[in-house]
Amino acid sequence: MPADQRPADAVSRGLVLVVEDEPAIADVLRLNLRAAGYGVEVVGDGSVALDRVRRLRPSAVVLDIGLPTIDGIEVCRRLRAENDWTPVLFVTARDDEVDRILGLELGADDYVTKPFSPRELVARVGGVLRRSRGTTDHDDVLRSGTLTVDPTSHTVAVDGEPVALTATEFDLLSHLMRRPGVVFTREQLLSDVWGYAATAGARTVDVHVAQVRAKLGGASPIRTVRSVGYAAERRDGERP
Image 1 (cartoon, rainbow, N blue to C red):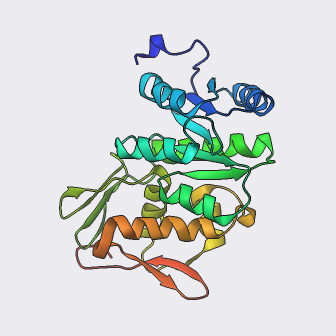
Image 2: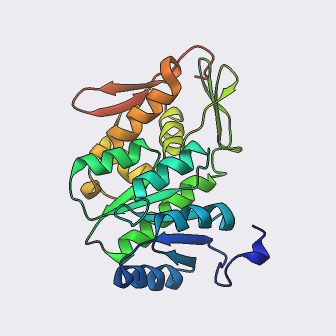
Image 3: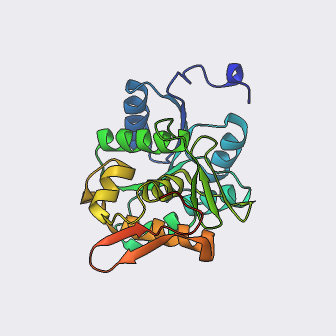
């Protein structure tokens, strides 16, 4: 949808689609995101959310898992099946690892668990958007064997064939590849890539690493350093 057809409050920081069926929570999210300078559109139904993403092209989606008609997990699944990689931040009241991991494996970029701090959620949205928009601080193409990562175009390819990564997966991979051979702890990666402390759960890093490896196959340069964390291997074709 052209910019002039978006909701009137879609201001400069971008439009965030909030998908939440609890009015009180939706109101808190709307107020805090608007106060932070975001445009906000709120819907309370999964099927309506799919329509809004397709029509409004939001910068990010804050997506509750427990929704009527179509739950948040299915919404994310359908978006990714359509090759729509709009950044998704899950909100869940289910405090168990299965829902979080399943959501991330579907291609979500982050999650928060109810009850949550509105300030934390706004910070998470900012982090997701920062990753999705990339950075111009490091614009050299990164190479490792047949793998190429282009920070400028935010693209990844193996043997010249494009590979679709979420914004968070891309940022994690490029962060490791910029310092090949350097071992990062999970806590360091949470701070450097996600932008917050380890209270979020180091398991988040493991899930994203697993997804990057699954998508890249044998071209993945990421190796596990037992009891420490992860590093990117230097391979033939990569600059020393």
